[in-house]
Image (cartoon, rainbow, N blue to C red; front, side):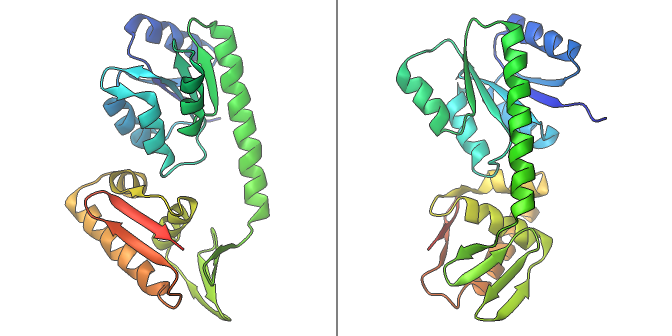
Length: 230
């Protein structure tokens, strides 16, 4: 059976080591990142099952990192660890995409219980979503995911797997800018020039596929990302 992988983002070395050893003793595989930049790269490389994320990091905060991850990933549970307890911090944590919030100091037993609870809840949600497979409306179009079928007025087009994934991510982030680098790392595993050009080609194709409905706009936010608006 595949080990459950935890991405632990914590800049305090002693606390990180204690948490890592405790989780490993319970059968979890743990990847430790001491800052936001390392965590962001590690997230795409490891594809963890859950993220345990400190709010205060040396190169930013966990809220910003969670927001970037949520631009392409609505499923992986995120559990915030923080010494901050102000109500606005709690709100920020959930608004940035967090699923749970644990205040320092915390007991390792409670941390493990909360991790398991989030993982079980996430599995149930994913099973329910997979069972439903309801088509989504994009303006006048109907989009069937993961089949990749785009329908309009009785006509249909079957998208490639890559086109399907890109359109689904754009749809999940409707009317919001989708970070270009996050999208490249999620789909290609890197953000080099050739991957970037490939992404531009796919975006152009999707824009062409959707042009029969003038209310739909697939906007290129220069140097930043893309936005599906309708």
